[in-house]
Image (cartoon, rainbow, N blue to C red):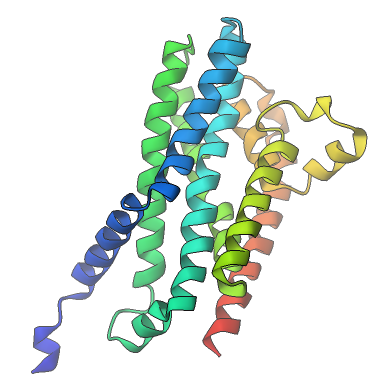
Length: 251
C-alpha cells in the first residue's frame, strides 16, 4: 500500500531538481555572484578595456564562458553539500525512500540551469561587443562551456563532503579565484611569471579556456589533444576526489 502512495522515480527526480532550483533562486548570495559576476566582468573587459576590438571580445567571451561555469559548480555543490551535511538534511534524505542519485541529479540540474542563464547573458553581451562566429563555432564553444560543468562540479562535490560549511565557503572562494586567475581566464598566462605559466598546465580552467578559444577560431585546433589529454586526467583526478569524499561521508 505504501509503495502505491510514493511518487514514481522520474517524478521524484523532477521534484527534487525543481526544489533545488527554487532553493538556489532564493539565495541572493548565491545567485548574484554566480550569474551576474561573469557578465559584469566580461562587459568591463570587452567594452571598457577592449577598446572595441572584435578579436579581444571574442577571446574574452571564450574564456569567460568557462569562468561562468565555475561559480554555480563550485558553490552549488561544495557549499550546498557542506551546509546540508551540517544541518542533517543530507542524512535525512539518505534515510528517506528517495532514489540514491536524486540529490546529486538535482544539484546537477540546478547548476546547469544557472550556467545556461549565465551563458545567455554572456553571449548576448558578446554579440553586442561585435563577436561574430559561424553557427558551428557558436555550437562548439557552447559545448565546451557546457561540458566545463563536469570537472568543476566534481571538485565542488569533493569539497562539500570533506569540509564544514564555513571552511567550504572559504575554500570554494580560494579555488574559484585561483582557477580563474592562474588558469588564464581573465588575461593570458603569458603575462604571468614562468612558474605560474607552468602551474597553469595542472589546472582544468586553463585547458578548457584554450579549447574554448580553439572552438571560437582564436587558437590552432591542431593543439586540441595537447589540452584534451591533460584535461581528461585532471577530470579523472577530480572524480576520484569527489568519490572518495562521498564514500568517506557515507561510512
